[in-house]
Length: 262
Image (cartoon, rainbow, N blue to C red; front, side, top):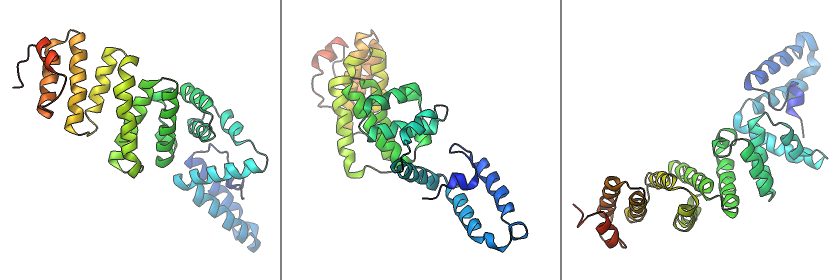
């Protein structure tokens, strides 16, 4: 398999401007007036290398395929990525590589070193790889009881899926994982303020009104515990608008001095 980077005389982390500059310089050397008429094959290879590496999607696919190829030839692709600590794209690939090779501990270590939830992997991986990576990462986080981080990744995935489907038939399972996390794990793993913020995030994801009503009921309970009486009253009233038959609200309505929804 041809090494397009070597053909252009550039590094794996070269920018698009570096690629363009290198192509122009090499193309000049292969011009018939300089290299003669026998350089046609070299020029063809150079042009192909430029076309692939100057296209972001084709370049990423080439990097992935070439990485597999050179690993078979004795090249340690993981070590190659690991040594590029100052290149966030390589580190994003490293996280995904480790996850795909069932090494969650190392994947999480790299992810946290890069900033965890602040690391914009969607910027460095193509969309489908990012979504697969984020889902596997969320699973690994749940195994380690890092429920807030898992929640935020799942929320990001559902937002992305709502905008443009990728998981498609798997979407109901993804939503189920998020709802189970919220129902059984999240509240006890974060402080009350963070929990309220998480519930507010859920309300913007387009779930059915009855499900939103249950989350709003939980928000009202938490706001009451925080002493935010007015806010708790308001959110419970909104919950009852979404689901007038909402269960487990009798005592909460008494605490909040709400006789019935307005």
